[in-house]
Image (cartoon, rainbow, N blue to C red; front, side, top):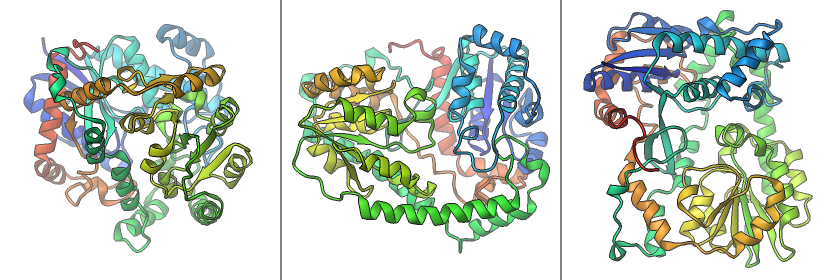
Length: 503
């Protein structure tokens, strides 16, 4: 019997390419849920390059309605799948105070989720897929589908970053599955800490991310930017703004809101310049790097710790008297116009906290720190390479491999957890084993490889352009090598049954 594979496709062509080459490598039945802007939708409706047995467009089944939801049905969904609907909704950036264009009501939120659940159950009952290939679980509607599929016992296959530059795996969200038979590290092959730091430098996530932030800076003289602005203001119709991510985006609001954010961003940057420390002293301190916000790694992976000001305050309360807390702003907040100055002022008001400028090298801070505390993210892993223990507040893909990374599940555990962690040493053998597993199980993949002239979707910043079959074929042909690698990695997991390996 052929494998039934359901593919969730986002608004770019990445998963379309994976589907195309997976179909060439594997005799299977393909189905797809497609998130698409109106213009490229016409291509997906008519395309013949991928033989999907059936497709569904997400926007056809989910619209914003300010009417009373069916609470009995929603309650049954929570019990049936073991999920918390309000927890998911509070993790959605478009539903909270960060939404600049529309204030969602309780009924709008719950009715939207009700429609999503009914749609998902309809699709899953019809297809009964063996595997789900899904994009990054970064928003509530994708997370909801992910959790329903997991509860139904469907094997979930996601492209997942190891937070080490271009190293990726195929996994279910945040688990590093590996074959123990491959990992036979001999003592003479172990690297020293110096050698491991050189390895880390080659795969430095920070330097890679900085290049992305620099390249993503909006240039108002750039042809792509100008076309995108024109498209958003004058070519996007009213009906195109009706999904929950675009609701309320009138021309006036788009112009006034973005001008306001640009001005606020400049003011906030000046505030950081005048109030942040740029030198790291030789003193005892614990390091807490601020996470980008909004971001799925805290909003979805650590929803009870997503209030970072609250996290910082509780860490400051729990510190031993002789230690300070160093808090550093994330450089990737610049394209998001930084955070409110009121947020920064509350950090500066804490008596045992130093606020560090985003330009300061994380390596310099790690070298002089005694302990790193992170919600999720890369810093706790990097700390191990610098022989420093760390604390995390949520599960991370590397947590189970390194005993020097301690997970704290509540603020009440912080004080004892910090004192325990400060006495903890990094185990060199464990770190070597983790690196060996990463080398054996990961593959190189640059997520920005598709952002070129061959990708018709990348013509604008908003991915709403007409796509022809010839353009799609040219895109697939140009990136054939990359897509074949991705498809083969998925196929490895499919043939192994997903996770029939030791964890």
